Length: 414
Image 1 (cartoon, rainbow, N blue to C red):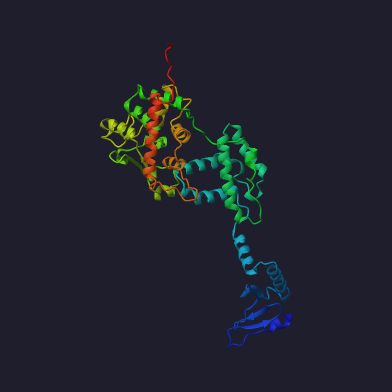
Image 2 (tube, rainbow, N blue to C red):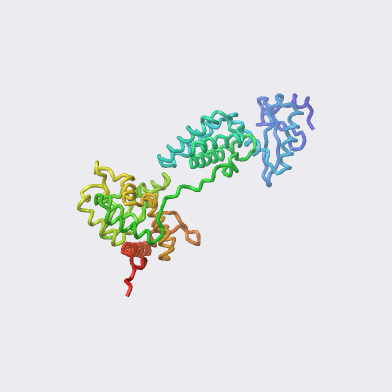
């Protein structure tokens, strides 16, 4: 074992790159020809030899070097690589202490928002700035207690925004998940369990008629709607193709092949992430013969422009979302059925009344679904099946509209 005097007097011959003076337990003092002296610990992990620097002599004395050696050997005995542990400590030290919730949230938002649609990014930022920053933005995130965050969420609930409170909690959960790997002290995500303390929110549902007889009444009312041909056609087309209102409103003549009976919606128009919008495939919608007839009848009226359903004030814009909603109210169905509700009506009755394949229905709805083996549903491969299915649905709607096989007509007494 070395003595302090030996360490002070240790030198390296000028013809050597370095000289080593062994102490004990794998520790040695390495001396360069220039006179610098450094402590090292040699050890093995999984058969591989490694070296851990313990500091420079005399800044780190012989006794201090032995303490550092013993600590490293204790880490190794517990299954921890001392060199890896040191790297982790350096990384922790590089993270600014006392980061506030807003500091972390701003960094998280900058990383995540480029993958989102502009509307989702704008809404998330608005909720951060309105519902979180004013109350906990300046607080060190490591010091925020679950009860403190719960009080913030309850402020949102108190103004009647139950859905917003649910969304704000989701944002907070993601921000804590983002921060936790960098926390200097191991701790849990404080958002765990808070959902049970909030008013239950089950998501927004759209009013929809799913009872065949009542739906037949709606179909008959739409046929005789006294408004313009553009809105009347949009009304009648909605149940036939059951696509999202935004996609139907923005339908363009360039997207339609009437001879092939296909409507191809560009990926950029679909309800997807920003990356999926840019890289995803278009959504192909088969058109039943009834839909093709409606579109051919409308073409002489709007076929000269871009949109199938142009607005009244400007043909450079599609009809507003309120156009069909107002028409449904005018027909007396506004509270019982929404434009978006045509999707729920189709999804329910196609299964309950026609016993059609739910996977093909979900594919037509542009929902991401998988088959029993976990494979993503191939919309192109099953296009013929979807053609057959949507035609069955359109024929069934004709029966409902006429009252056939649904309404028992009264008979005269003999």
